[in-house]
Image (cartoon, rainbow over all chains, first blue to last red; front, top):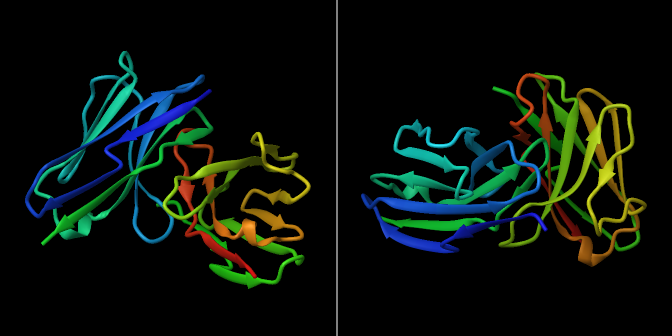
Length: 108
Length: 116
């Protein structure tokens, strides 16, 4: 059965801290791993990872994929209160399986 | 960037009635649209995949007669929840995929359905 597991389930940090979110996957057909940020409504796209070992960066966020060990991490440095959200990862090809998410709360 | 809209954003209906939710890709042609359901504090669960002009493919455990999907054009897909019951109350989100990048999906803002 295809599955995507995220850890930790929730996390509380203070502004300025660095956090690492984990995503492991077991899917029958894998092409890409996607990271999304979900606040109150629909998820917003962060990264798409297709190749192993190549870090993608966007400001304070970065992510990397390990296709051998079947996992990805999302790093957020110098966290801000606006980073508080649920972070979702999804793995698959044209059809994606989503993890249950990591709920991040950043305290001022 | 690609924009996907959903209508309505929120709907309350009585048990036994049917509700239609629209998903539109505003600035690109969506050959494939996906419908997800999300219960509180849970992740997105894929319900079905619809391709323009063909029948939708439903995930295991999703009743196709209850959740009718129509993808009549390259910019519009509809989900109709028939004979809705309180347990159908959920957040329904669609996503759309164009031709340029087959891996990336663009999500609509979601529709909160409450069945009383």
